[in-house]
Amino acid sequence: MSRSVRTRPEGSGQALSEAYDTALLDLDGVVYAGGHAIVHAVESLATAREGGMRLAYVTNNALRTPDAVAEHLTELGIPTGADDVITSAQAVARLISEQVPEGARVLVIGGEGLRVALRERGLEPVESADDDPAAVVQGYGGPDLPWGRFAEASYAVARGVPWFASNTDLTIPSGRGIAPGNGAAVQVVRIATGAEPQVAGKPLPPMHRETILRTGAERPLVVGDRLDTDIEGAFNGGVDSLLVLTGVTDAALLLAAPPQHRPTYVDADLRGLLTGQPEVVAEGSGFRCGGWTASAGAGVAPGERGRAGGRLELDGDGAVPDGLRALCAAAWTAAGEGSCELDAGKALARLGW
Image 1 (tube, rainbow, N blue to C red):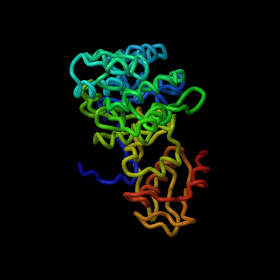
Image 2: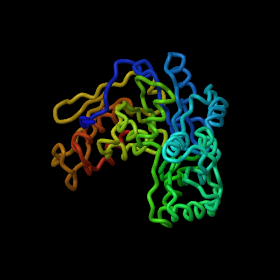
Image 3: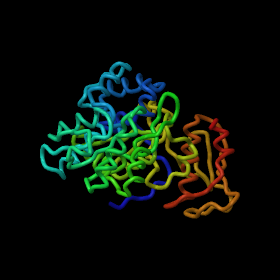
Image 4: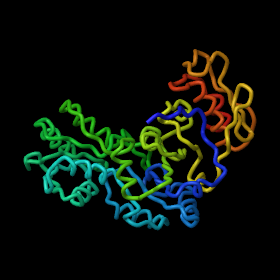
């Protein structure tokens, strides 16, 4: 599918909760971190839901079951049913079920979420490489997953058993900071075996397919905090996206984003669902959003990599997200279809980053 290269965040004259029928919300870094709700999340989601927007929670974290996730969200003050939760465990279980016989044994390296999803597809979870598995599946198992589980996966994969991974996120947000994710664990088995798994989670198509099948969304908006999973997944699925800056992605990463990582909209947090998005307009040699004007420094032509000393410049005043949107337009336009090495330090410092 051919796509035009995004060179600036889009505007919206409507609140996003009115312009889209379903929000496909990531969890870690968007709704909660380390088990606690992120600021403004509970009230923003309540307002969006009361206005008629369906809320679906789409997570690459395969550790917990949809029931457990729904219970946790409800405890946080976000009423949720298990049918509102879509996990990478469900996506990978469907992928496996399409390639092995019904009732086949699957070696599980991960948590209860994987086991429940496999049983839902008529597959039998097993614990050892000696249980004659037809497949191996690996998903995030929490910080206490024993090292020996990686050995079991390696023994089976080295014998030629098909290997699947729920996702390959290298990191995961926690209440104490950024922790190793399932991608780090997958790398352990990759090193031991030299094999490559089939991956189901964001940003790959199996996860998007699972989400659309389970939600029936017609005008979905992906809401996430990660460029390489949430935003790229929306790009691959051909749907719009909102990046919130409450998780992994910071402003510097956003400005350096290649085309597949550039979100449709940018906002500080989930309050962005409840408002329109201001338009970014070309003005002279730069771009204006709200009270801010941003431009790429001298010596940087559209589509070229910035030369040494090239920088982003920001003038004006106003809301911080508006300044960031203007900077995105200047940086993405300079980068075109590639990347652009620009010094954004002073510009971001003006916004408090």
